[in-house]
Image (tube, rainbow, N blue to C red; front, side, top):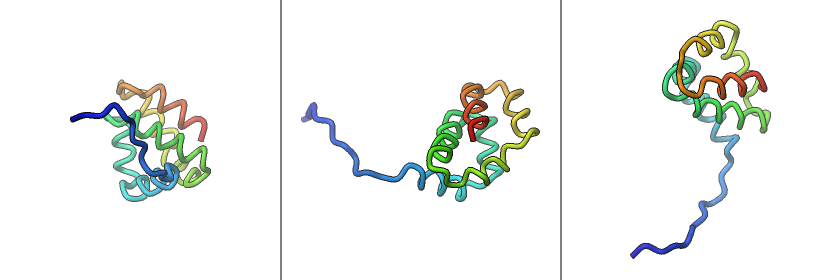
Length: 89
């Protein structure tokens, strides 16, 4: 029987998750997701890095002019959100 109670998840550190994800996935996979179907995921990753200041310098290095141009020209859904988050890094 389904209850109508919302159970909250235990607290977790989103910034640590974002940093760990970035390192485990690696630069090529993150950039592939950014130009593919994962633009919104990578946008949120960038936001978490920015607000925590963890891994920001490394992420900035991953999104150079060429990579940003590739994202801009990709036509992928969410690219505008991602480009804005990259700009804020």
